[in-house]
Length: 121
Image (cartoon, rainbow, N blue to C red; front, side):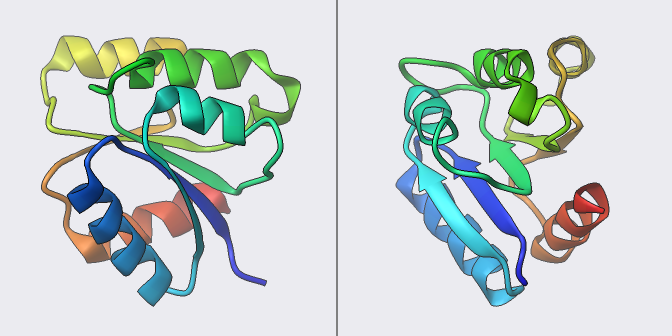
């Protein structure tokens, strides 16, 4: 049974790159176009890992992590942040709200797949 991954990113190009990379690695991929849609979809969908951008309209990635961590069904779901942001303070904010890991764009496909497999175990 393949792992189900939710990607949340407002960039269609990034969503397409994530879909190609993750689907080629054998994962089932669900996608949301922003944080609000992602949080709404995760009320109904069970996933093994969430990958979210930080800078998005309607709801940023910090709020996505915060809201998911408040829900019992997502308190232990691995949540990876994938963003262009690399400042230490922003990474700390991500950890403080409950993010599992932080990856900086552009991403290395092999490293992304390896990280997803590692956190899903």
